[in-house]
Amino acid sequence: MRTLPAAELLEIWERGVQGDPLSRMLDLLAAAFPETGRDELAHEPIGARDARLLSLREALFGPAIMSMARCPECGERLDLKFMVDDVRVPPSVGRDGPLRLRIGSYGIVFRLPDTMDLATCAGMDIEEARARLLQRCLYEGRCDDEPISASEIPGEVAGHIIAAMAAADPQADLQIALICPACGHRWSIIFDIVSFLWSEIDAWAMRLLHDVHVLAHAYGWSEAAILLLSPQRRQIYLTMATG
Image (tube, rainbow, N blue to C red):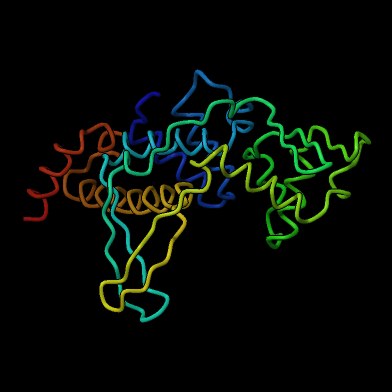
């Protein structure tokens, strides 16, 4: 993984503002992991992709993650703080190869979903998305040794397949257990590194553009020159410029 200079990250942000979440996420990964082709990144299992995004997030903003949640029962605000390593899951054995499942008379061979699979589910409800993922990820389906299509797999069997996908790729479905300190309610939230990292990059970009505006006004420097400054030196100049 390579370090992304401020100017390059700002360009990725600018392109991504009008883009869809999955495309801008692939732009980030392609820039940070140039040794891996964009097409290969797009077809990695979701957990492998999210593990890369966690590493990129740590490189950009450090290991500590701060967020918030609200209790669905009483509305109490919870301030969350955890480390990247707390939500990093070791990859499962066989995650990159075909997976096999036997449920009664049904024999299923399938793969794990990737980013391109998720992209085809945009705008669908949960049931439609499950059906689409099953259709795309099914290598082979049999019932009593007779071939069947994804649409012929009963709902109960499909549920087992989806559960097997989640078990084989736990990084792809990361949930954080919470307890409300006010009312004691227990629940879980999904930690979506794709949207979380982009929200951090968006906030960083707006702060950086403000810094550029202040320094350009104070010293007459170009944006390119300001972006070449280290964050530490930029902050020192900002302190002097704003008194």
